[in-house]
Length: 209
Image 1: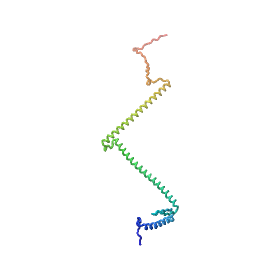
Image 2: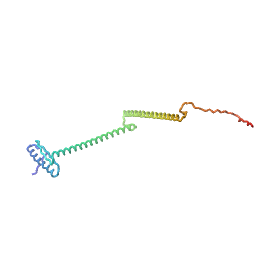
Image 3: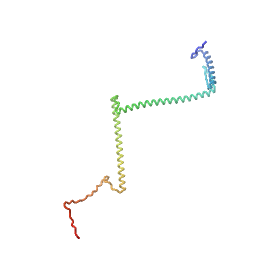
């Protein structure tokens, strides 16, 4: 007679459930023992009945086996947490990269609009805003340009003043007179007196001794 397949559901009859529990429990304990002997495996089996009665089997010390299991579970939990953290970081990096790509695209579009390209889709308000931004940018550029001009002029004045002081010290050391272009004294001019005579040259008489 062929034995029918047992349905995997709770046995409602209490007596049948207790008989099945005893048979399956003994079979499970026997299988655990055979597994530990045949395969040299460390096996620990714990069973609680519906009444709370404990049945256990251990090929070694039950406490050591449980401690080993807890340590492995803790290590696995730590590894899983690290993997989860790595996955989270990877996801954050991907999101940051996508956000950065969008920002770069927006900046590129703004740059092209400032250069006068791609203005067709812009509304009147957008064009007014773009014009305002350009005027502000030009104002800042002019302010910066004027500041650099003033700094350059001030630098040239200081350099000119330094050179004049060096020249004055050099003239003072060498006993030289101030140059006519650096002082306000009157220039000395030499007048040459000449006499104009029209006629034959004057003959001089040679007196004989």
